[in-house]
Length: 326
Image 1 (tube, one colour):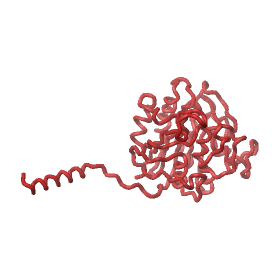
Image 2: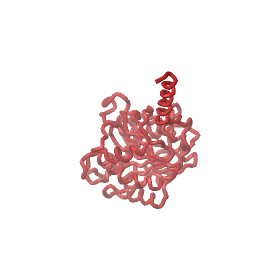
Image 3: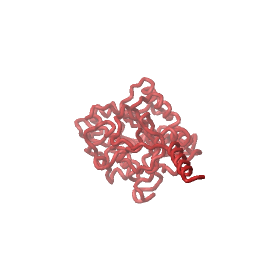
Image 4: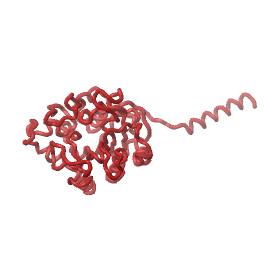
């Protein structure tokens, strides 16, 4: 082969290689504007624990459809600190010990109040909660109706829970009574009210969905006896219903409060561990992403997507999640 033919052949190979190479567009510089957002939170599971056997819906159905972050970290151990971090960009030592709102309530900015100020409707859906704005844990995991107030961040904020922004066990605000609501009754794993809202399309723009302690994977409850599988089964039931009502600007997020670990000074040494973060929506580019983020980055992403004028706590200095958008 002559030298000229070699050059031409090589050029043809280069053109062919580039023709079949994946094209990766630069991510946008801002978070897109959100229509409706649904956030579902599971419990105490590291990303590395999930597999096709114990979490078939997440691994075989959700992951291929979603932006799947592999370097998303919880902020702490135990639970309450993470729920508070996700919604206010900070947490206290009291909350890190999983104490209730009567002991740990704070007069601090949070996503719920920010959305109210911005005129964005919101609801926090708590499975097995006996009444709106309930401040005490109730039910039993063995009966499939365990409501844990420590997983209900809205009632920890003075400007959400109490009349006039003053936290009170008795003088609860109308906002708390109408927006921090049960997903159904206190029967076994009851999501009837939430599912009815999906059917009637009466849900708010921001929806934080907190399963009970059986369905969030916190406890090993019957019939599966496996916490990871129990949450996966919850997702297999609820995610398709949510997807069925989503519009082009809507977003679904599935994540966990923290990875597997012990108390505040135990477990892995990287905050609360690396947990699943899956985002689904028409404006999300499915794929696996290595962008580092955490619960503060989630909060900043929510604030930017709903165009709030303020940023709570550490969200003010944390970058939003940008790599996943089309």
